[in-house]
Image (cartoon, rainbow, N blue to C red; front, side, top):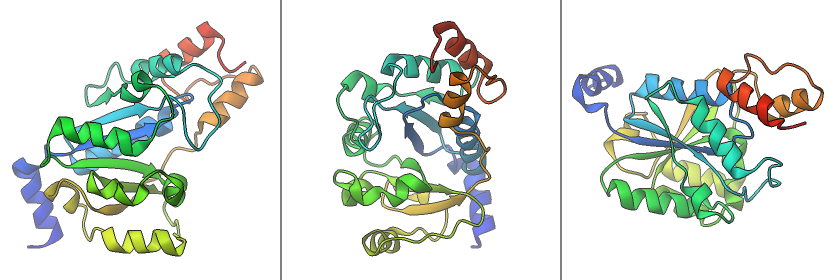
Amino acid sequence: MTIDSSLSALSAGQRSKGVVIMGGTFDPIHHGHLRSAIDLLDKHGFKELRLVPCFQPVHKDRPNVSALQRLDMVRLSIENDSRLCVDDREITREGPSYTIDTLKTIRSEIGESEPLIMVLGTDSFLSLPTWADWWDLTEYCHIVVVARPGWDSEYISELNAFYENHRALSAIELQSAPAGKVWLETLTPLGISSSMIRNLCRQSLSIAYLLPKAVQEYIDHNQLYK
């Protein structure tokens, strides 16, 4: 069976599998995050995609806005899209947001057989060896690395061994097993970043069309990032 025919078979009734999680600071969330999320759902037909805002990032400075404000903005950003949902477990858990802890709790909730897919950007993937218990992540989930077109990976030897040991030959493997694979997904992301939006706010410049209108209004109303 070819890959194309396999995809057709999945389309016929097997493509409503897979819980996808996309974590981040979301400081603030913007159309770049949301477009990547929708692209993944459209391309692979996963069952759901959860946005998981962290309480306290481990490898970044603590955000200037509160965790609850960032959570509010994520909720506002997806209020009109039933394909996306918010998972607030890291906010309610408080403390440093260790991904391995989040994966363990989600896995215990969705069961052993449901595919669980974690989405990472390339920078996050390259920093993986600095994460707590990083080698164990694939015991609980697959990892999808979202790369820009033409991105040429240059891994340190430890990460290269991890990638080669878990590399998926086809995206179909993300739905045919509950965990264990790493897949490089090429998307064309929007040229938007949270730091760009924060800088525009500090300069009292418009952030219109970079993020959902409801989020823009929330930022304006609460005078965030000034």
